Image (cartoon, rainbow, N blue to C red):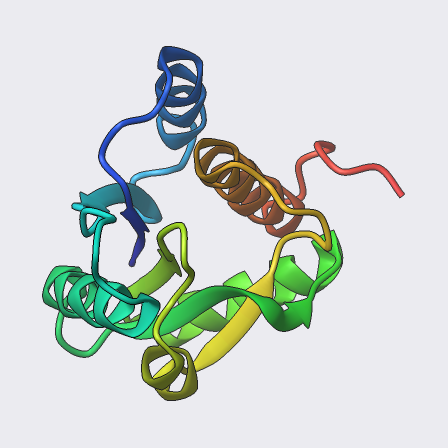
Length: 155
């Protein structure tokens, strides 16, 4: 099974790239984690709907056919570590790839959010996109660790 993080935006600070790489290499071979950065639509004279539509098309092209789509959205379901671990276990039992999608500066297109299999949120706080990538991969690793019985999570 593969966890594919599809994130709008191609440039992140070096610290974010290093943190992503550090966590991504910790996953076992049977649960690969990959990052697919897609180009953000240039901000200019276009309206938000046009920007989101262009990014939606790029995101959709990056998602493998048959993958479970999980949109990261501020209106999504908040999950505890244990709840994310349970979701991850369910995804693994399903055996399909999972695409976790991080939108651009204007968020995800409403029709894309509505069509996603799930919508989750990482925080009630507004976070920089580079930090969201790092926080997401860390939380996925923590969820895997909980499921594997590692003492990474303490209650």
